[in-house]
Image (tube, rainbow, N blue to C red; front, side, top):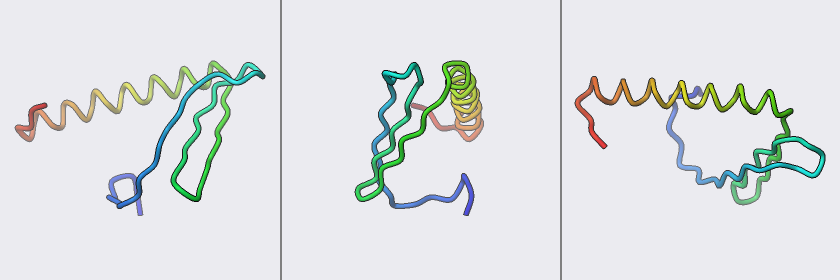
Length: 68
């Protein structure tokens, strides 16, 4: 299984600051809850990676003739 493998799992993602000065990504997938805390600089790096992936996905979709 990899990042390109589709699955029928629904999950909710919440993002926010903690009272300890961290950035928390909280994933809730029914019976599973995953809190992930990051230093602010790490969170900014993750945000940059998400933006780069979104840009790449947009380009891939445009190449395949898909439009939003």
